[in-house]
Length: 364
Image 1 (tube, rainbow, N blue to C red):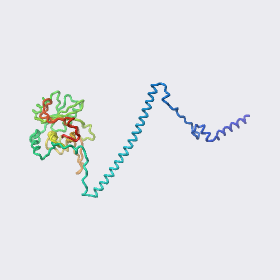
Image 2 (image 1 turned 180 degrees about the vertical axis):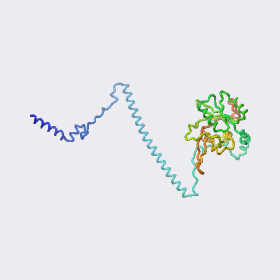
Image 3 (image 1 turned 135 degrees about the vertical axis):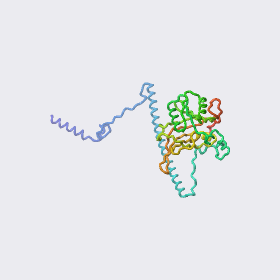
Image 4 (image 1 turned 30 degrees about the vertical axis):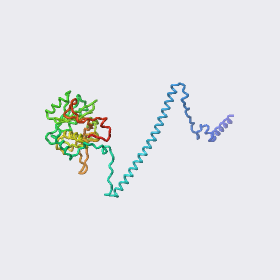
């Protein structure tokens, strides 16, 4: 009996091993080849939630997730399309540029002049007060204005730099750095003294200019430049102030050499006066051995100030290295005489709603 049972068990094992693949797939749950069955999680339905508030919350959550996925998918498609368009336009421009270059080389001297790109600056509205150097009236005004003694070398610039009451650390550092790039200038902290009392003292001590740095919320935001003894006085809005340590790839500290002064794009009568005011801050006869230059660049009535040093790499190549500080000025008003906020007579005042209606109309 024992032998019969053992032989029957052996035959049943052989039958299990010799099952067809179709039968094995049924046992494996449809995976085939003896692989373990795959069990899927039950489908979730929001309608099965009995709590009404919880059901509404889950419904809105799923709806928002679906909307986010759709937005991301559309955004990805749009970004790909934009890249394709930009890349195609770049290739087309490059091919056109090469074609025009070959045509110009083939024509040689007969090639037409290169077209000038259109910008807001070169499309500006013509100003009737644009300065003509050959105009006799302009020459007479220059010979009789308040800056004539400086340009006739009768006076030497001597500048006093002060601040608003209780200046913060950043404004103090900016004032000190500004004094280091304007020769023959001194820093004086007001300590509550009114400007109307400072100006007579400056005139008595032979100062030719007074610079006042104003601040708001620990940020320098204004500059008053008053030419002594009889004015004029200009009020500027100051922005984008960068100290030396905040400028990347800056050079070493500026030396005591007298720098060159570059005035760019001061074309109108008003701009001409502002340019002469900036020029009168620096002494005559710059010391070229110091290789330092102060630039006042006017573009769209914004005056950008930069202080650089020349670097001669070879006889033909010259580079520049920024020393700092840098800032941007926007003229707010030009007043006749010295500073007087209450009874002063203004020669020009910036009225934003009236003067800024045309983007191509500039005043400097």
